[in-house]
Length: 264
Image: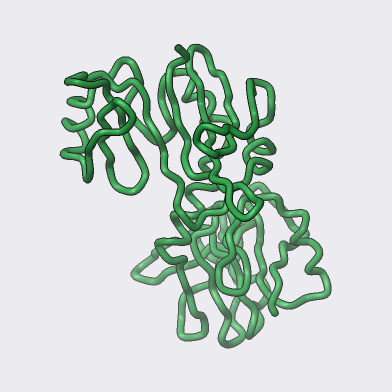
C-alpha cells in the first residue's frame, strides 16, 4: 500500500508533498494538518488535488518575474499533492508547494477530490480557534447572522427560502442546505435565538480532536448527557455557549453538530 510522505523541505510557500512509497514514510506522522483518507493516501488541509507523473517531466521553479525555470525532474510513478494552480496562455501549472510547479501535459494526470471529500475536509478545518472568537460575537463560523439580533427575515432576504422547515422542541427551525439550521421561538417569533452547523454524516471528528484544536481555556463542561444520550463539549464565549455534540455509538463518539446559543 502506498504511504504519504512530506518532504523535509518546508518553506514559507508551503509543504512539498509527495505521496508514494519510500523508506522515509515516517515523516508523515509529523504532519499534524487535518486530513481525510483519499484513495490510498491522505487529503490534507490546503490541498486541492494531486498530480501523478506518467513520464519523467520537468520540475519547475517560479521566478520573481512570474516565469518558470526548470530545476530538476519529476520521476515517473510519483504522485504529489497540489496546493494551487496557475493558468497561463491556456496551460495549467500545478503548484506542489515550496514554489515548485509541474506543467500540465500528457505526461501528468491531475485529479481533484470528490464533493464528499471536500465536505469532510471543510468540517475538519472548521474546528479551529476562530470558531470560538466568532461565537463570542454571536456568530457560528461561516454564517453572516448573529443570534439574538438578526431575524429569519434577514436570513431569507439573503439566502432565499429554506430547503426545509418545521417544529422542533418548542421552536421553529429553518434549514439551509445540508449544513445550517436557524431557530426562532413559537408561535411567530422572528429573532434567531440559536443556530446549528450540521457535520457530514461520514466525517469522523472525535472529542479529542476538538479539544486538541481548541484547547480548554474557555471549556466549562465535557461529558455524557443522559437526557439525549450524547457526549457534549461546551465552551463559554462572552454571553454565548458553543456546544460540540457527539453521537455515541459502538463505544466511540463522533461529532454530529455544533450548536450556538446565548446563555440563559
